[in-house]
Length: 407
Image (cartoon, rainbow, N blue to C red):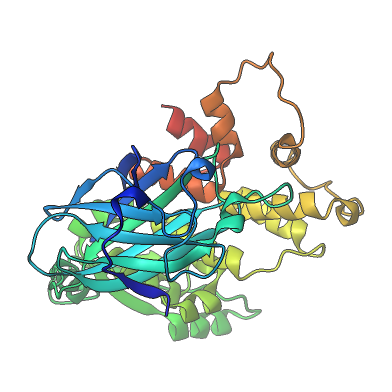
């Protein structure tokens, strides 16, 4: 049982109050309060079993909280394990809380989840949170310390029933609602055929009508707004470059709907292509993430994927291709890059440089600022997350994303 109730009174001499750096950071879950709590000089903290380092307090849901860190383990911990507990320091009313405690490494993320009743008299957490030796690391494994400091990420949210805002369900009810719509799309997928009669039959068999609302489309993207500008009342706007089912999913997404993994599996690039053309950026990026995580880059398809990533401005896919090229440099030497545009080759060289930079001494004569160096080493997902937190455009090439962050 990883989840332990820490209700034993600690001996005063076993407590060390540590001045910790605490920051509230943005969580992907809007109901969660997420904090970073940094313990400097982790290896120098008291590490005998049962000794405790108490963080500074922080405020959440009208109460004060803190972290109890046992660098050498709690009384019930296994040998060599670090114990971590979340303590509510104020208030007597019982609070049902979901909480998480974790930390990030260079290549992995560790997180533990729990939910408990906090009534001010107990702490909840894990007696066997993580191995001390693995946190510290060694010459071969870097561990989880940064400049000797351990940063814990603590998430707290109420474990109560809270009704959802119904606005999204109202929007979905408007999807393809013929009675309230003021614009119509006629989706006619073009199919190649040798005869005119076959083309007409094919057009009729794939023709679909979808009803929408200009007010919603105009505020979603410039491309959809431009479509609305061509509307003549309820005369259908003809769309011939997107499959009917793909356009239906695209509209459904615009109205707040979600796309299933099964649909992503079937349509793959179709979502990227359509979302890119009609400015549905988040759908394009979600489809790109799905494609990257479900596509194996090989010697046989590396060039096709690279050219596609460049043509569609798919920075995450391009990064995945570049990673493959760097990691498979011996095999890639026999691949022809004749059809690859010159600017893509520059990106490849930059990827190689980033890959080997960690093993090379820095150049004190570089004009590049430390911030620029940090951005150039960041993964695409991290660049996009930073841009999203600032409310900036998250689509575009690596260079475009970094330029947006610099502004």
